[in-house]
Length: 194
Picture 1 (cartoon, rainbow, N blue to C red):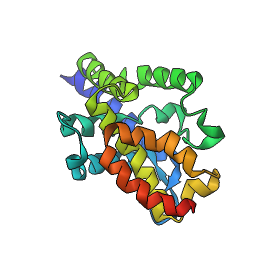
Picture 2 (cartoon, rainbow, N blue to C red; picture 1 turned 135 degrees about the vertical axis):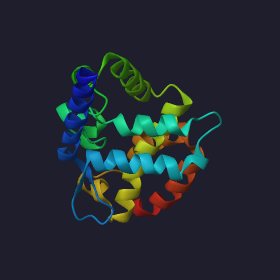
Picture 3 (spheres, helix red, strand yellow; picture 1 turned 120 degrees about the horizontal axis):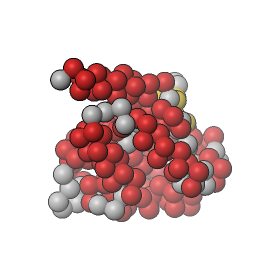
Picture 4 (cartoon, rainbow, N blue to C red; picture 1 turned 30 degrees about the horizontal axis):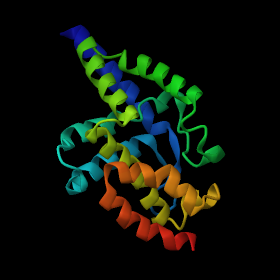
């Protein structure tokens, strides 16, 4: 029991470091960059509130669990903005390898049963091949769009993003897991790009 608690708290204490990882996306008021801990919490809330946008068979409790852990690897890797360097660094083999190594270390802090369970959930999110993961990934893409809209363009202005880039890098991912949500968000975003 003591060893298990030591491992659980070692993981929880390590997870606190996610609050120090600054993202490119700002808070909706544009006052400062959000941190990855705030982002993960906000996404879990998105899942709870936007559950009616999920497709048939999506388990919102699993989606919330995915969203709470999906960015833990950023403790080691940092945030890789989707619009930086033409979006190439975000999905590069180097970034994916670094994230897998971080997942080994971070989830490895847990007792083996929890480590296996949470690592599998993280891998499911990354693969985005299940309805739960596609919906979770959609929300992960929607939240920064909404922050950019509320903050006067945010990272779109910083990275000179075009609407075509937004649609290819973000919209296509949102549409896979929440098509009605993308239709609504797209209508809100298009005027910004004039």
